[in-house]
Length: 247
Image 1: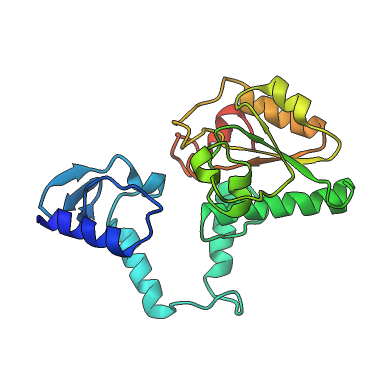
Image 2: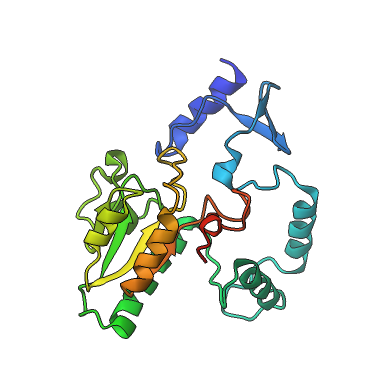
């Protein structure tokens, strides 16, 4: 049995089968290149599902992480931290927003956006308690938590995880007419990916994002743009929405 086969067999025996990886066992990586346990080199076209904007082993990032780990490993939000305020300030400036809420994962960010939209709907818009609706797009990918898979249209993502969380309306991606028809007085938000990732890197029709923003503003509805894969310079702008003047 080769080193690759042995490593894969061990992973199959001891780890849950929630992913179906390629038969490549990575041992090291630098920049855009990965080397497997057999010494073969691969160009990393996945880039950690777009998380590796600066490549593997970027020295500035590695040194910054090492320096921080040597100063303070973890404080949690039970304490203030001397770098936290600066980090949030710079991130808010980069995003063009007043405030930010750092999260560990994309799914947590979307879950928090859902909670925020619902609370805004009840406390500000005046939606009756328990009646808030959020409109989403078909073929979406926002994460794998119970609430998020409830409005997925991927059968594999949903299978055997019911009962599903209510309060979501699914419309075709890129269809402003369908979106307009789905919005009601109890709609609190529209949640979309500016470019759909897992669906196949689908770019919406020209004017769609601007149309969504105009519609949500006119109908007193929040617009939640899931830029987890399309944001932070990956499309040539800080956020993909900026290509259509949406902030």
